[in-house]
Length: 419
Ligand SMILES: Cc1ncc(COP(=O)(O)O)c(C=O)c1O
Image 1 (cartoon, rainbow, N blue to C red):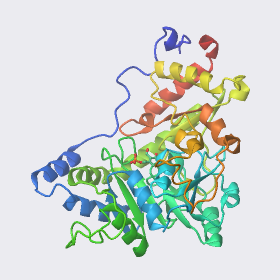
Image 2 (image 1 turned 90 degrees about the horizontal axis):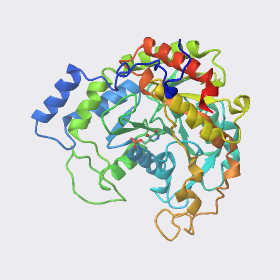
Image 3 (image 1 turned 90 degrees about the vertical axis):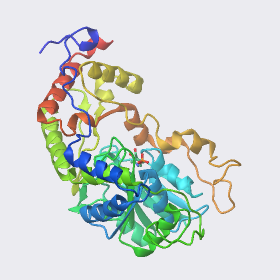
C-alpha cells in the first residue's frame, strides 16, 4: 500500500465508481411502481393499504399506518400516548432533530437525557431521574440501528405508568432480546427516507398493537377525521388533525423494497462484521459495540476518533474534520451525522416553538433546564464521530468493507501528513 495520502496527491484506496449507490433498483420495483401509475387511485390507494398490512406482518405488529414521513409517525405516536400541552416527553440528547421536535408539534415539552458514550443511545441509568409528575412518555431512539436496552426502559415506564415510543426510524429489523424493535414499546415509528434501510424516497410507518392508540394516531394522520380514506367519511373534524397520509406511488416503491429488505439487512450485517474484523488494530479509532441482547442492523456504522490518544482533545471536532477529508479523498463515503446535540439547537435554547415562548410559556408547563453541561457524553460523541451508510449497503459487498478498512489504516497511520 502506498503511504502518500490521496489528499496530498497519492492514489486513492477506493477508485471512483467502485462504490455503488443505494438503493438497488430492479424489476420488482419497476413492476410495482408502473402498476401503481397505470391504476387510477393515486392518493391513499391500494398499495397504501397493502403496504400497511405487509409491513405490520414483516415487523410483527398488529397495526400499521403508512405516513409521508417518519416525523409524521413520531408526531402520531405522541398523540397516541395521550400527550397534551405542557406534558413532558423524555428523549435522548443526541438524535435526529425530529426525535425531539415531534414533541413540540403537540405543544409538549422535551426533556433530554444524556447518552451512554459506548452505545450512543440514551443512558438508561439516567432515565429515572428525568421523570417528573408531568412525564407522559419516553421516546427511545434506536440510534444508528442499535437497540436501546428495552428491558430496563419498559420496567421504569411500568413503574411510573408512562408510555414508551420507539423511534425505530433507523432500526428496521434490529432486535433486542430476540424481539424486533417497534414491537417492544407501546408504539413506534419507522422512516423510509432515501437513506434508510428501507427506502421509498420519503415515507414512514406508525406501528402499534393497541387499538385505542391506533385510532388516536389515525385521527391526527388524516385531518382529525375518524374514518380512513377507504371508509365512508363524514368529513367532520373531531380533533386536531394534520395530513400525514402516504400516496400510492410511494407505497408501491416501499412494498417492492420490503420484499428485498431481509436480504439487504443480512448483507449489511455481514459487511459490518467484515469491516469490524478488518479494522481491529487500526490506531486511534473506537469501533461500534453492541450491549448484551442487542442485535443492530448497522444502519450507520459509526466510528469515533480517540482524541485523548491522538492528543487532540481541545480541537477534537476540527481535527476530526481533517481526518474525514483524508478518508473522503481515499474514496470512503463518510460524514459527520449530527454536528449539534439536540438541546444545543436554537429552538430549545430559545425555548420558543410557536411564538410567545410556546409551549414552554404555557401555564400547563413547568420550567425545564437545558444547560448544556448536563450532556457531556453526547457532546463528546458529537465532536469525535464519523459515520457511514452507503459503503455497507447493498449492492456493496465485503470487498468494499475491506477497502474501507484499508483506507482507515492508511489515513490513521499517516496523520502526520495532515498537520
Ligand atoms: C432517528 C430518526 N428519527 C426520525 C427521523 C425522521 O424521519 P423522516 O426523515 O422520515 O421524517 C429520522 C430521519 O432521518 C431519524 O434518523
